[in-house]
Length: 82
Figure 1 (tube, one colour):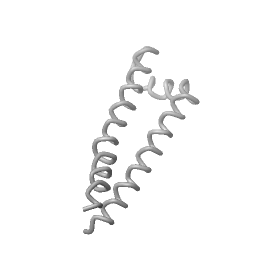
Figure 2: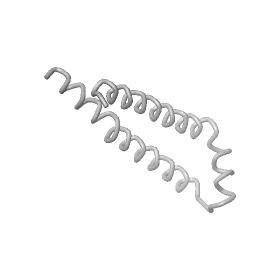
Figure 3: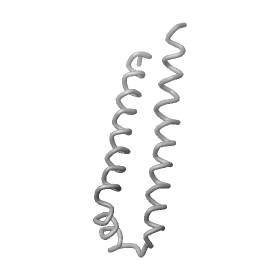
Figure 4: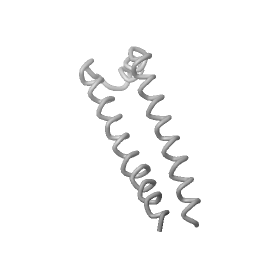
């Protein structure tokens, strides 16, 4: 596995994960009531609990993207000069 291949894999993974995060955010903002009624079938959540759960989930997902995709990609770009 070459460094170029690894860079490309990390870049594609970064773009895919940000697309998932964007889809989650758009679904949450545009179809919040639908999502809440769907989740309300399985769990009893208050409005503030539902919002906090999704906001926290998006935050953790974004931190994961930064740690596992962006940081290694930047490190590989930095060592490319050597």
